[in-house]
Image 1 (cartoon, rainbow, N blue to C red):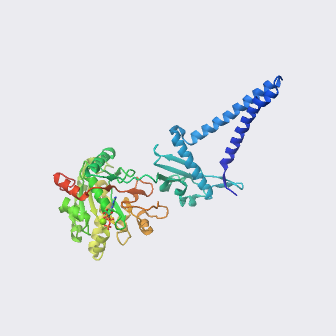
Image 2: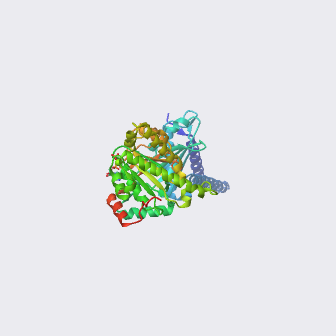
Image 3: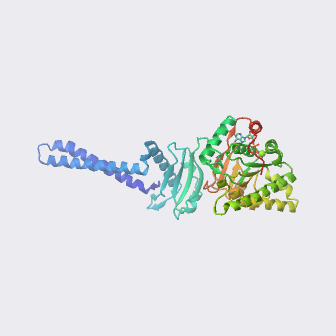
Length: 452
Ligand SMILES: Nc1ncnc2c1ncn2[C@@H]1O[C@H](COP(=O)(O)OP(=O)(O)OP(=O)(O)O)[C@@H](O)[C@H]1O
Ligand SMILES: [Mg+2]
């Protein structure tokens, strides 16, 4: 038997009542009044007919008002229609998938569905489906995308009070990946971005922006765009109002080592010994900053380096797994590096010291879990296997799955995203290496001033 929503019963009753009173009104005022013309009762019939008309109109207006309120007509006709359409398809899908509490044989009481679009362009929004003790675990695993038409689920999580399952949705036809055709365009965008969100913020795409700097774990299979993404981020850093100090470590000796060698050779290393020396140097700077901040922090508890306009320090390491593999044979070195890294990750946030680690997979053999799990910003590029997703995000089942192109993947950022959601890094349609190095030569005071 076809499943039906209990509310459809009320709609049928409302429709039937409205049509029958309308019909009765027409009959009483039309044919019946004509047939009884000349009789005194004709007058009564006409009045009764008017009453029926009024009743039908009241039902019609009541229904229209209910619809307008339920679908937020005050935000515009287009908004209301889109809302109604989406509500209907989600409810139909929930019904077909067997959600809802059975009332009798055919009728089911569906969970309440709330939809909110971010703006009137309807490119993104939030769908909330009411939780019920019966559907609790099954709603967690539901794939809502199939019911959303052109929308796809970007992230799903349960609300703080556990009463609603929340699905962040976005229009799949809209490409949020930014493209810059020149360095000037990127610089202009980056400056406007820091003006809007603050001097220590980064962006990835049109949706993931205003991300305050923090330590980063960037994972992705070979060729997924990790080094490219790092170069895009370096270009952003160059346009920060307070220039950060970047250290470049690249055991593979490729893009990042070459770029660092040209931007800041004294803070670039591509051999294991050199990288460990750089790390010690970075740690010492952090300790100096700690002393400096201790004085400043007295009386201003809870402040961080941004409150004193101090520059951020970033230790950028590409191909961390290669580095880990080389140090793992020497226990003393391995322990020292692990200790340094852990201290930086744990203490660095307030002091303004961050590590950005790029690697192909993040198993515990490739990076110590104590470091990996404490990196607050996690990005996985490309079509990573479930085991990699599990090590980064702690889950793999309910993550949005797409065919990711170069520079696209998932982001999870403590305090910004409620659950991992899609991200893309800008496409740089110009010679990034030439532009970065050339720009550095033009500016005596570039992104990498000498560390104090
Ligand atoms: N956001 C992007 N937009 C357009 N093309 C990109 C993007 N990211 C990466 N690519 C393309 O993919 C190529 C490979 O990227 P990249 O060298 O960054 O990969 P990788 O993840 O660092 O690989 P490996 O692990 O082997 O070092 C780049 O040379 C570039 O052509
Ligand atoms: Mg690379």
